[in-house]
Length: 165
Image (cartoon, rainbow, N blue to C red):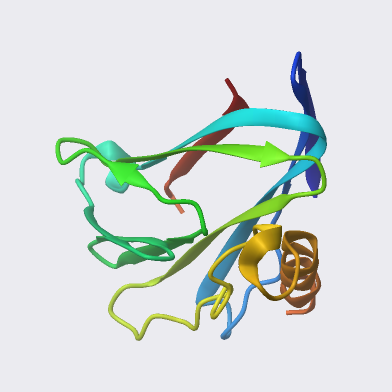
């Protein structure tokens, strides 16, 4: 587990990264990032660039309501997040700009799997939003539940940065 704290004039956030144990006989790997508001309100920007075959293979990207799926050859990646993602057709870059407030936790779950097999169940299944106004559990409860679930349970690919702006 890695926790990085960033402070700006408007607030403080923690970026918590961890990798739970592999699931489905080591054929599915997850990396979890939780952006947690500690003080105030902080504007954030997230970039995820996918590289396959040492950068020689351009992936196919399919955005959906809960994130995006990226496939290149035998590799499949799913990025799950309640934050809307943007992409440009000429790159494999996915971006997101968002604001995190004190007490709020926003998850990003990256899952690698073999693209020639069925896609594994989503980690954030039925978790449409981590905002406290979601009508159900608060964002902190959803992210805590994800952390608990994940912790029980190659030349790749993901460069990501989540930075206050």
